[in-house]
Image (cartoon, rainbow, N blue to C red; front, top):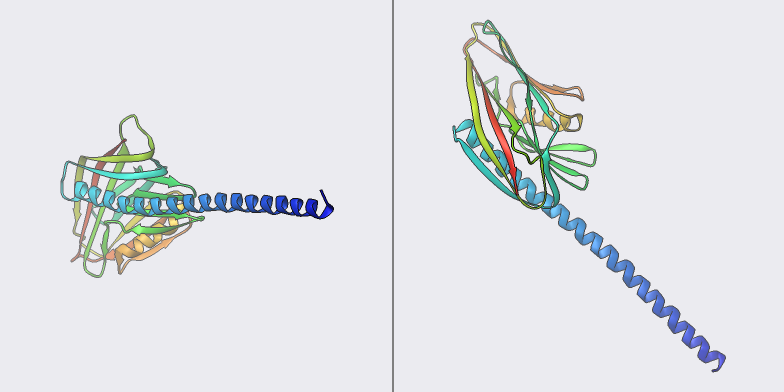
Length: 250
């Protein structure tokens, strides 16, 4: 074989190797991109499912429905019980009404670095170290309109299943005990609603309280968020405390 023939053969082998290596890189990158895109699409679908879950929970706590079931597709994600959030309502009046640091157990869906959480009638998404409000809470904090309604939905997990991964899942909601306190102040009164979630969701909860407020002062300190509403003796404050149990199923 001549040197020229050997050179042509080596050149062909080298070129063929480069082509194969390039195809491998493209295929791997393509699969990663497809999987990432699929996970984002799944997370977006789950967000919609969580909005529907929140709507079902609203039926249970507001419409006196005894139970509701919400279904969702999890893809590669995990549905699980989240870290408790504390909610406190204080009405500074002669009635001295206070809902003292009730523990609300969130429902959380996790996939990659993205979490979607239902807690306190709101839906929050966490991603990239921050959090945003997906669905505002059922609070009605209208200090200017003379009506403040705070439903404190105390969710808690029952059953033996604390998490569900992959495929399909359902969340069954069951209404428990409930009580309603109506306060008509005899003088100017402050109503303070405080939400103490995990620090990563405080930002979204400040937005949540702002979205539910009209004429109230809203703030946060990085560990909790609050709304303070000043009402007069012509106004009405309604505090509803409803226990709602949830159970996971596959």
